[in-house]
Length: 192
Image 1: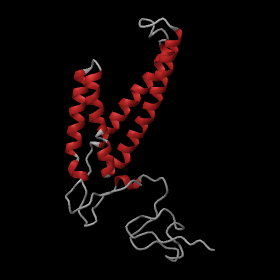
Image 2 (image 1 turned 90 degrees about the vertical axis):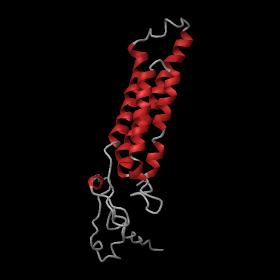
Image 3 (image 1 turned 120 degrees about the vertical axis):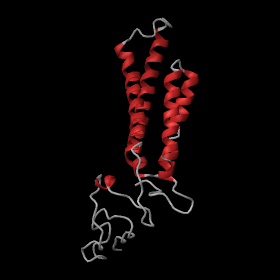
Image 4 (image 1 turned 45 degrees about the horizontal axis):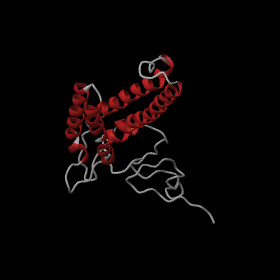
């Protein structure tokens, strides 16, 4: 059985001639359509339009969520480095070597997991939130929830209250970018 690639729908850019069915187009892409190089980010700065042709305004507030991810990343590195940089950090709380070993491992593991979340947050902010995907906007409500939780669980109440208010304000300010109206879909509804 011979495998023939199906032509891509007209509103989706082709990744390569073979992906769009080179034979179907006689070796040429359809008019007004260029092949996008896989991994290319050139499309990220293009003007995006709704299906009805209206221009989609992109908010620069994606940078704020990128910075929230970077802030988490910096804290993650601190968590991973602290046990090596200050091995006696927990001596004021306990002298039990097993407990100190447990805390050391816990800090490193928590830092590694948080670093993964930070990288994922920065990637989502820089790509999908920036391009107007609704799921990214909904996902980033995690930040105000995280910051609000931190108000009640840490000593830095002022810092986390400020971060909570800034995150909520940024999400409210970008609501129109993601939800134009009930009858108009957002610029993009799925990742990719």
